[in-house]
Length: 98
Image (cartoon, rainbow, N blue to C red; front, side, top):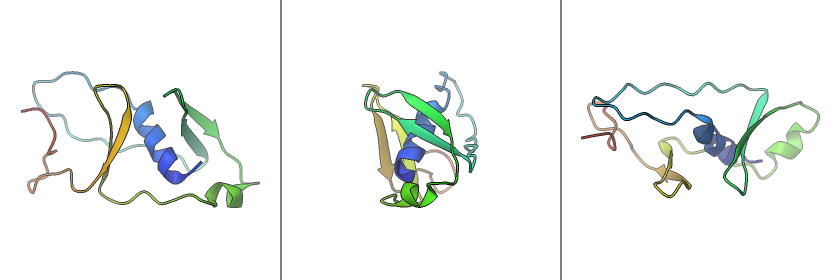
């Protein structure tokens, strides 16, 4: 599993946002160094307790997720990622409500 897949899976595991009148502040993801996260072919997410016996194999072919990458679920339920700035100059989320 690549680190990119790992990050994509984390988005899927986050609780779905509830409609709100005001934009809520962003909250950081809680990543554990000994956990792996998966997003399978059917769109399901999983978390796995990882060991160190095959760490070299895990990192083979893995790619770092670029900074300024946004992950989101589209209206069709598909997981997407978008590289590039996602905050306004004043720190507000570019794609937030009104």
